[in-house]
Length: 260
Ligand code: COA
Image 1: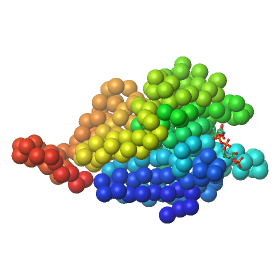
Image 2 (image 1 turned 45 degrees about the vertical axis):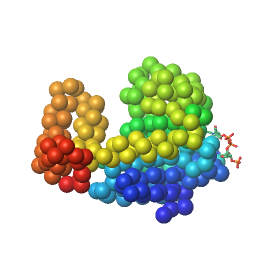
Image 3 (image 1 turned 60 degrees about the vertical axis):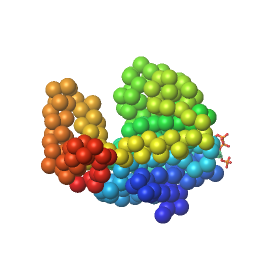
Image 4 (image 1 turned 180 degrees about the vertical axis):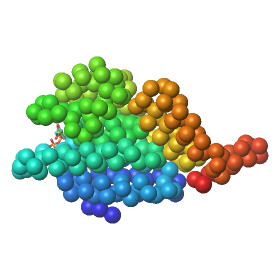
């Protein structure tokens, strides 16, 4: 277990990853990033994990993005290396094969929101605020924000948010489709776990193939996307879980999927 990144695995094979620097608004220091990247790498090879939830320690912040205090002492080469490290870590989260949820428990700015954008589903506490604030700091989003935000919100809204460096409330974020749901702070983790449990009931290989089909298909034309879907479907045909789904239906019971 790391110092700045904690994780917990429950009986449903749901992992909760907690960014753990509450005294620094869970900002992405180099040490935290190295721990997070290492953990995500390990999780990417874990066959049994059904869903991963990312959240922040404490009630105030999910993640305040790059560690601006650490950044102030860096030369240009170190800045480039650290920006690359944030980008690689966020991309590794996006590439996790199993479904992921960002449970945004408070402020999510800059790289913090970019991390959430790399998750499949985002939900937030009603007290959370979020935004890509980089242009107000003389830089631009450097961990995929200029690419993922327009894919989620469309280019016009994404440009408005990035050009103004605006901080939006959870209410506004839900209205524009940046998050799927806002909850009371108390209920956030319960709701995130409930959603993860609902996902975890379904067949793991099917979930991974559905994620792959959506993520690759969205990047291409419809015809190619449909071909990708066909290939991803084909990967489920020979699974024991597919047969278990059919059997459970016939026997009028809940299926027990093993990811095989
Ligand atoms: N890097 C390093 N430290 C940070 C940080 C960051 N990105 N964001 C916050 N912190 C530190 C603060 O300096 C403070 O430390 P201190 O007590 O030693 O002064 C501590 O975290 C708590 O932050 P504070 O601002 O006092 O708490 P808050 O609840 O009022 O506000 C934020 C939290 C996250 C809303 C606010 O700190 C903020 O806006 N941070 C900058 C976010 C940002 O623009 N990130 C983009 C980076 S590209």
